[in-house]
Image (tube, rainbow, N blue to C red):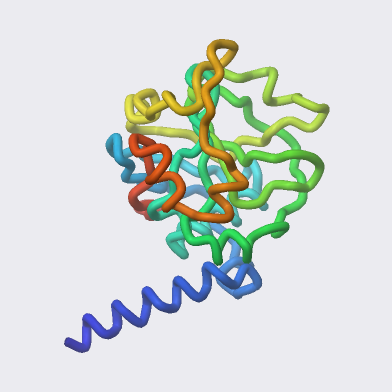
Length: 214
């Protein structure tokens, strides 16, 4: 019984931390390299993060994984032959807490080849909690787009077939038919209830955990 109580207390602490971006958990330095196992609705991927590619980006990602931020987070923008984007939390209180909590820019030190993961960004110093996987080689375009590019922070080292299989029906194909995919504004306001009601076959990260570090 005491073990169940400890588990419940830990879960409550993590939920509170997710709503407090200023918590000490988000100021720690990540390991030089570590693997994150992402269990998704399509299977399991292992992602290797490399801190020397983007120290600030990897530190933020490591902290978010440790606090279980990405559990039950949808791939809300999957464009076939381009990217699979995720990171808007299903709990609207968490989304509100992280709004505007960005990290400074860093140079692009690795190419946006297939399987790499980078932060989404809409301008200078705007990387926050949204990321995307490159589902094809997007170099050199995403390395230099809008003069700043998107610095990769890691890459898929196992389970590439899972990345290839993510459902793209709601966002369409690059350069092809455009579909009325999920609205980021609606997702931010309503949370996962919006995705499950309007896009029932969307894929999700079920859980993400650090499984190896060095």
